[in-house]
Image (cartoon, rainbow, N blue to C red; front, side, top):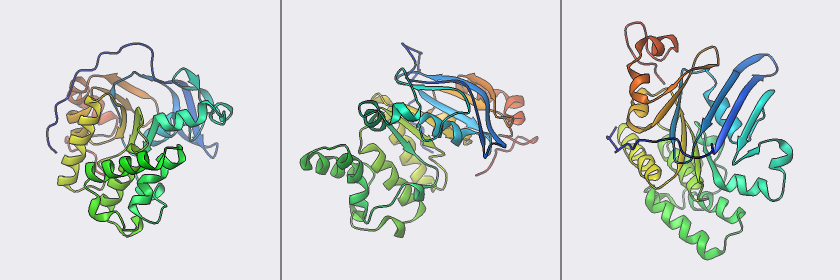
Amino acid sequence: MAEPTKQGEPKQGEPILQVENVWYRYLGRFPALAGVSLAVYPGEFLAVLGANGSGKSTLLRLLAGLIHPERGRVRAFGVELRPETLEDAAFGPAFRARVGVLFQNPDSQLFNATVEEEIAFAPLQMGLDDGEVARRVEAMLALLDLGHLRDRPPFQLSGGEKKRVALAAVLAQGPEVLLLDEPMAGLDPRSQDHLADLLAELHRHGRTIVMATHDLEAVRLLAGRVVVLGEDHRVAADGPPEAILQDTALLRAANLISARGRRSRD
């Protein structure tokens, strides 16, 4: 990956997102998170680092209001995320506009007939006028180098192209917060470089970014703070990337490197 400039990120003000002693199990039996607490502050680039199955994706889905905890609370912009609050006519649409989610598998969020329609979907749902929708579509096509694909059906694209279209669709809504699930997974080295540069630029312009990953190189390049989820689905560490990445005992215990120091693979 390219080496984008990474800024220090002092915590300022109240958290923009907050998870308080959250427990979650799938089907009531399979643990995903066990008493997890963390806070995300405005303007942070937070990496949630953990091996496959540690609960990273579940945490992002909770922060996005797509699922709700069995115990504990999730708060966004000072409001607890519950089915009732997300259905509120004032808070729900505003929350969805302010928080954008990129899933690990782009097929989970691509459903329109063409790339252009995919990017236009969120701005249209937000009730923007045709001129603003067109402006955002053109800006995203240029930003993600998708102009030559604008009339193509997303399902016909390569995995890397699908991920770029999904990110363009998320960015078109103009979110303040980006929740990214393994954004580098499945990308070739050139695409990884481009995405790393883009995320660093978005962060420099004020986006709050939470990135779930087990990619240690992406953490080193991009994150200002790291929360490590262990295989017991609890927070194992919370600190600056330099300290986290130098703690080989921690990384080994979290199954992020092998006993011989090899990194966890996709």
